[in-house]
Length: 414
Ligand SMILES: Cc1cc2nc3c(=O)[nH]c(=O)nc-3n(C[C@H](O)[C@H](O)[C@H](O)COP(=O)(O)OP(=O)(O)OC[C@H]3O[C@@H](n4cnc5c(N)ncnc54)[C@H](O)[C@@H]3O)c2cc1C
Image (cartoon, rainbow, N blue to C red; front, side, top):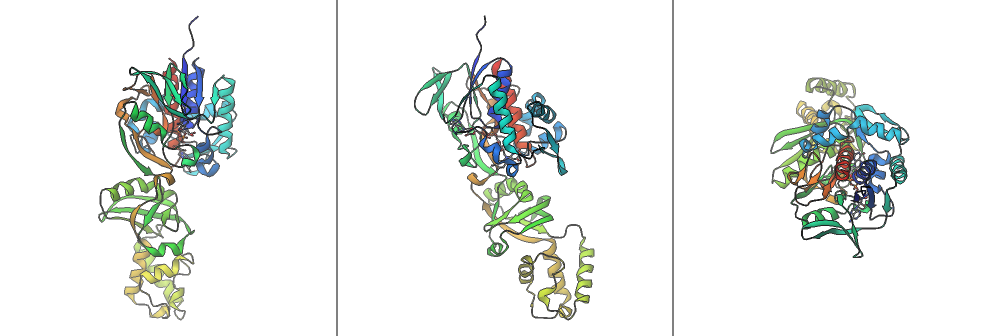
C-alpha cells in the first residue's frame, strides 16, 4: 500500500486552515502547528468580529482589488473562487449573505462560527492540531527540506511543509512575522514590509478636537504633490492622531508609499459630495439670507456636525461674533472651498502592528503561482499574507488567503 504523504502546515490562520483542509481531503496526513492556544485568532477579529469572508463578483474584480500582485493570484482564484468558498462554508454549516456593496458575511454575523466550522471539519478529516506549538525554523539538511524545528528544539519530519504564518500586523493574534524570517533563512527574498490598510497620521493638531467623529457619505481624495491620484466615497473617522475608517484605509497604501517617496501628501475631504459647487454655493447663500441676524457661529448649523463647525469656521477665518448677514462673498467662498476640500497633510501612517494587512513579504517571483510551490526550496509551499500580496478592504484579503491556502494544500498533497 502506498504510504500517505505527510504534510506540516505552519499557522492555523485562514490560509493554513484551508491548506490543511485541501491536503487532508486529497488524502495526506496533515499536522497543523499553531503558536497560539486557539486556531484562527485573526479570523476571529475580522470585519469587527463579523468576518467579511469574501466579496461577490467575477475574477477580474478580485484581481483588480488585490492591489499588491493581483496577477499572481489567477490560478489560486481558479482553484477556489468566492462561490466555491461560500459553498464550502455552507457545507460546513456556515450560511453566508451578501451585504450592500458586495461584501459577504456569515448569516450569523459571527467570525467565530467560521473558525469553529474549520476546526470541526479538520478534526473530522483527522488533521492533528498542535496548538501552543510555535515552529522555530524549517528543518533543512543538505538543502533538503525534512520538516520543521519547533521552538523547544525538537524536530518533526514531513514530506512537505506549508508556510502560512500570516503577516506582521496585529501581533497579539499570533501573526508576528515569523514566516518572513523562516523563508528568508531558507533562501527566499523579501520585498520590504509596509503597513497597508492602515490609519493615517496628519500634521493638523486640530484633528484631535474631532476625535471619535465619524462621517458618512463623504469623499476623500488623495493628493500627491498637488495631483489627485485617487478618491473614495463612503465612511471615515477622526482619531487622536489623524484619519481612519474604510475610505481612509483604502487610500492608505498609496499614501504610505508616496510619503516614503518624499512626496507632499494630502487627503482632501469633500463633506458634501452630492452637491456641485454651484448648488452648494446657492445653498449657502440661501441659508445665510434666511439666518441673517444670527451670529456667524451658527452659519453651518444645518450643514455640519457640531464638532466640525468651529474647526471649519476657524480655518475660513470667520469672525464668529459677526452676524451671518454680514458675511462677505469671499468669506462664503472660503467656506465653500473648505466644505468641498477640507485638507489634511499626511505625515505617515500608524505602525505595521496597527495595519489591517502587511504589504510586502516573500517575493512572488520565487513561488510558482500554479501550485504555490517554492522555487527555492523543494517541498516548501507558501500561502496567505506571508507572500507579497495584499488587497483592498471588502473580503479580498481573506479570499486571497483561502484561495492560496487551498491551492498550496492541494498541490502539496499530490
Ligand atoms: C482587525 C482586522 C480586521 C480584518 N478584517 C478583514 C475582513 O473583514 N476581511 C478580509 O478579507 N480581511 C480582513 N483582515 C485581513 C485578514 O485577516 C488577513 O489578511 C488574513 O487573516 C491572512 O490570513 P493568513 O492565514 O495568511 O494569516 P493569519 O490569519 O494571520 O494566520 C497566521 C497564523 O500563523 C500563526 N503563526 C505565526 N507564526 C507562527 C509560528 N512560528 N509557528 C506556528 N504558528 C505561527 C499565527 O498565530 C496565526 O494563527 C483583517 C485584519 C485585521 C487585523
